[in-house]
Length: 231
Image (cartoon, rainbow, N blue to C red; front, side, top):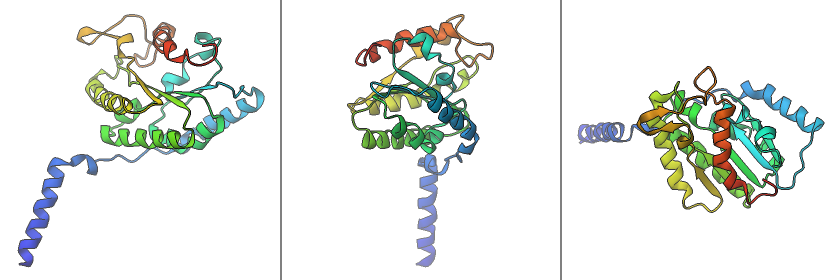
């Protein structure tokens, strides 16, 4: 009897491993303290050049946000850039209090998730972090709108494009039922049919956008900012 029960337990375990491997494959998050210097610099910038709190649009996430010159591309928008290069969603969660409750924006533009997948995290793990982040924002700042920019295709990381698209589609589907959450697919600004990239939108690393690339992103995003004051 005991041996039969043990065999059943082993069989069930094998079934779970075979059909639900995602729950056993979570990667360890990178150390968020690598961004302490960046957040110290943000704090100093806040003291020397405080932003008007009314109708503030907070841009945050990884380097695709950090390199976006908001003053150049959104000169009439009350916007603040708090992107930090290499960020994972787990890092955004770690610094949550220094980003969202602190600035209390009317709108958030978020680009994050690409680095997570590139590092080896699974789509379910990254989506779980996103859902946790959204839940906290929706609870603490219920009137705030969050715009999530899809993971982008890039020449350097095109090998994981299907994985990025998997996450994109899951977040898009989830956002459809959420009043204050908007998913924007930015892939069409960079990629033609047949996985052919538009020319001239990349820095020399073939990963980050140049100004021509950000011009395309700005055009894609602007209609969603028209509800804010003086976009």
